[in-house]
Amino acid sequence: MLDIIARLFNSAPGSALQKLKHSYEQTPMEIALYNRKRYCVFLNSQYFTNGFDKETFIGKEDSYYFEKLQIDSLSLKKRADAFTEALEQKKTVRFTEKLYFPHTNKTMYFKRVYQPVFLNGDDSVSHVAFFGSNLTAIILSQKELKYLAFHDKLTGLGNRDFFNQQLEQMIVESARRSDAQISAVLFCDLDNFKLVNDSLGHDVGDLVLIETARRIKKSLRLSDSIFRLGGDEFTIILKELKQDVDAGTVAEKLIHSVSEPYKIHEHTISYLTMSAGIAMFPRDGKDRETLTSNADMAMYEAKKHAKNNFKFFSEDLTQSAKERLRIVKGLKELIQQNDFERQFNVLYQPIYEKIKNERYSIVGSEALLRWNHPKQGSISPALFIPIAEESNLIQHFGEWILQRSLTDFKYLRSLFPEKPLYISINLSAKQLNAPALVDILHNTVRSISVPYENIQLEITETSIIDDSNIALKNLFKLSDMGFRLAIDDFGVGFASLSYLQKIPASVIKIDRTFVQQALTSKQNSGLVKSIILLGKNLDKEVIAEGVENQSHLDFLDAAQCYKYQGYHFSRPLALADLEQKLKAEQNI
Ligand code: C2E
Ligand code: MG
Ligand code: MG
Image (tube, rainbow, N blue to C red; front, side, top):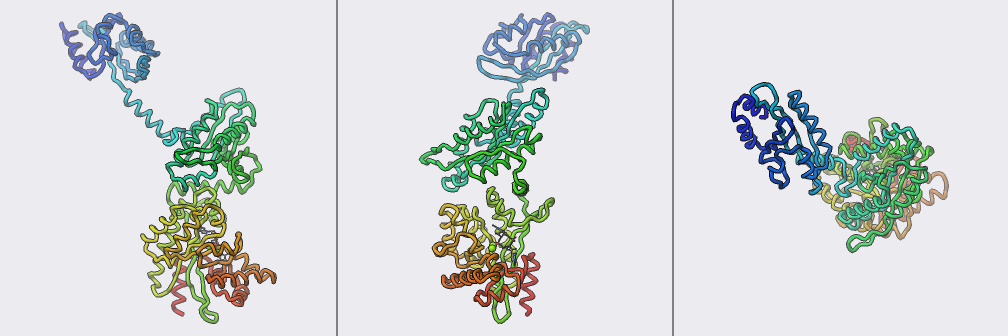
């Protein structure tokens, strides 16, 4: 558009200046016209004068305009240079301008164009036109988008991406410096935060996180930066430390401040503490990934030993901690992609009952999760389930296991409608202690449509002793709904008689180590016999796990235990293989 206007008037004789002004008046952008001496000869009505009469600026240079509007900017020089270029080299010059207006405390952004004007009838420049469009709204929304992409909405702290970026920057900057700098990465995680969410709800949980962020911020210097990675995980970058121990002092201060009681609405929460791990730069890692994972590992050590403290990373952090971290990382990736099908699989180990002399029949099967990691190969659930528990990840795929095994079970039932079969599903402690468990089970079972009485839920003793009474409440509800409840790995926990009476389970599964040791000494065999007897007297069904050979079977037979699970009968099977086994049984 500028070009058209210019061409039109550059060729217009006589009242060309008047016509030009008139046309500028019609143009919806800020326009000023200057003579060769840089004095302003015209301002259109769009021109921003901040309430001053336009005439005030006519005949004046830009510096006067800047002074009058108290504009604080380096732009005056930029304008002067652009003006010179337009005037002397007859060029159209474009640039952007950021102006700060102190009286309104506003920063505005403009796109500017200086354009030579030829009204002399030849190719000499008579004037220079100045065009402006306000980019403030666009720039601010871009800034806002950038802010949102790098900040956590809840606490306003930087998010994981921002943390990664800042850490990289810290590493690059310190490489440029000649003097060696010590920095530290702190990985912090609240202890018992889940209890807040579970018992007081997520709204209170959110307020707690906001308050935690505030406390951490207050305990730090301005040059330190703090981020929320998600959930109750925070990281901190401490720069320019004098010595390593300073990072410990900061961690101690933070933990102390975060562990003070929280008053949220009518609640006083005094059980929240924090554990932290520290990795020093450059000693404990020269790149972002190493530093972060070493700080995370140190945090895990702190949590493991005694919560509410901190630990420095050290090289001799055990191999198992590294393995744990790899597993947590792998699980988090799966959860993020929400694609469990790709790496998870469920196998079914049949559970048998002796029906007649030397004849055994499948009565149910236990769903056992398998993880085939693309790089690490198959990872045992005995290894990764406890880690998924500790790191609060199990609830993310507990539902998937449920869906998958119930869907498979429904299919099996449709093939063998006459056969009374049940599916046995393991529930972890975290799942059992989640207030939402009953609803989740109810909805899933309903949607897949399997009778409750055909579903056995396996729980371990420790998951009930461990935590609040949520678990016990859940168990009573589930039992009332009609689920079969089984105590898994019976004997290895803190089994006591009173405990057995307390929970509404109708099945006990004797842990495989007991079964296997039964034959090694009289004492052990006595123990297993008394467990079987105990079960019978309390009217519970008893299943022996880990039945590996004929001797185990003979022993159990003599002790009058007639339900079994173990390699002697079958290993955990793929659904199709279980189907074959059931078919073979049908044909006998
Ligand atoms: P568990 O619930 O006690 O499951 C029985 C375990 O004993 C299974 O190990 C099974 O393969 C193994 N087993 C069965 N018969 C024999 C035998 O004759 N000899 C020996 N040595 N082992 C036998 P697996 O599949 O490795 O699972 C280990 C544990 O991981 C399970 O113990 C359970 O606690 C947990 N787990 C597995 N799948 C799930 C799941 O879907 N959810 C939850 N929460 N936990 C699971
Ligand atoms: Mg089990
Ligand atoms: Mg078991």
